[in-house]
Amino acid sequence: MVKVNCLNPISKVGTSKFTDNYEFTDNFEEANAVLVRSAAMHDMELSDNLLAVARAGAGVNNIPLDKCAEKGVVVFNTPGANANGVKELVLCGMLLASRDIIGGNKWVENNKEDENINKTMEKAKKNFAGNEIMGKKLGVIGLGAIGSLIANAATELGMEVYGYDPFISVDGAWRLSSEVKHVNTREEIYKECDFITVHTPLLDDTREMINKDTIAMMKDGVVILNFARDLLVCDDDMIAALESGKVKRYVTDFPNAKIAKAKNVIATPHLGASTEESEDNCAVMAVKELKDFIENGNIINSVNYPKCDLGVCDKVTRITICHKNIPNMIGQLSSAVAAEGMNISDMVDKSRGDYAYTIMDLDSKATAELVEKIEAIEGVIKVRIVK
Ligand SMILES: NC(=O)C1=CN([C@@H]2O[C@H](COP(=O)(O)OP(=O)(O)OC[C@H]3O[C@@H](n4cnc5c(N)ncnc54)[C@H](O)[C@@H]3O)[C@@H](O)[C@H]2O)C=CC1
Ligand SMILES: O=C(O)CCC(=O)C(=O)O
Image (cartoon, rainbow, N blue to C red; front, side):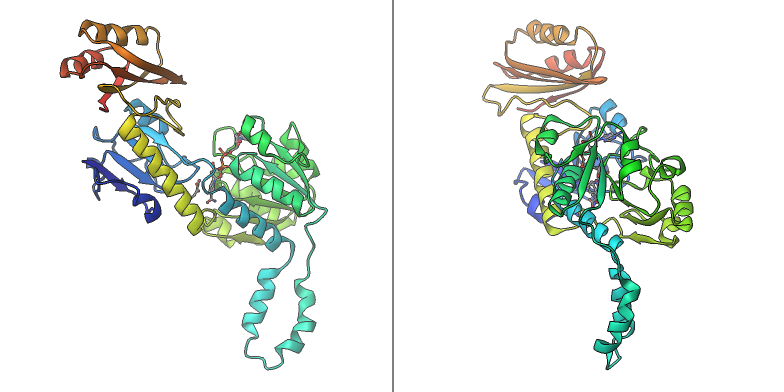
């Protein structure tokens, strides 16, 4: 029985796809597979039972990727599965920042007992007037699943869109509307745009990319949207820019104690992916990835091990090996199999950074001796008999 632990509530549309060979446990220590959304895993002890973690979502900064790789724990995410949910909230954020919809709505709430509200509102409404987004320049930093959807949608709304992503994937580039102006530096976006939205992962390179120096390059009255991660923006510098009016509005899905109190902030409590559709999509994809890994040893959409897929095993045995990406590993693995008098009928070995992964199909049943021999090879992290 494969034990699955959910560190956050996960949509039943996904979890119902586990078959009778799987059972849920509340005990993280005994779990073979973990499903997680935003729960912080950095301080959690990883037990030897753990084979895989699936993040039902995109961002993986809550998961210790290297610590997992070092223990042979494969971490997955669900690329694109919640992108439309975030896109819609970002478009909403742009509209909320352009016109004082929130102020107007509060006014109606405060005046709801006024019998003549339909008349008094005609005088009050001038306080909530704003601008249209059509014709304005939008800069999108990060043109992945979310950024590219926003860029394309904004062109449809009549915005002039600038996109920046030095690592854009081939698929990402194909997805992008030809209306989006591709720029080669963030500075071009900072200098040119009326709205700037960030959609990169939180990495060393992107941490606090919005700070006093980059804000200084921007137009007066710029609107900044952050539906990616809190630490992409320097809070103190943002608060100063909001105070001075340099930044007209900061729309963020990641308020903290400082930002929630700041002037001209429009904040939501990390709601980007909180739609039924996104939650279902992420859960279904995460469960599919976990099942394919547990049942076939295949790795699709991992963020700490390479993509490695040998389909469904139709041979006698399949074993998988998580190992360090060092010389002569394949030679040593095949020698260990040959020394047991066994034949490899199919094999794939892929690497990613410091780690690598091998799937081997054998014509005869894997033995405990074979597993021991492979485990004894320097650089081997985890050996698993899948079938
Ligand atoms: N508010 C919410 O609920 C959600 C927030 N997110 C956040 O949004 C981020 C992006 O999500 P997706 O678009 O699905 O991820 P993605 O992986 O499809 O796209 C990220 C893009 O950022 C680009 N990138 C990386 N470093 C960059 C840099 N230095 N400058 C410019 N571009 C860079 C990559 O090349 C990639 O195209 C996630 O990492 C996560 O932090 C994601 C989903 C929901
Ligand atoms: O699961 C969630 O609600 C958070 C989504 C998110 O931030 C992500 O996918 O990166």
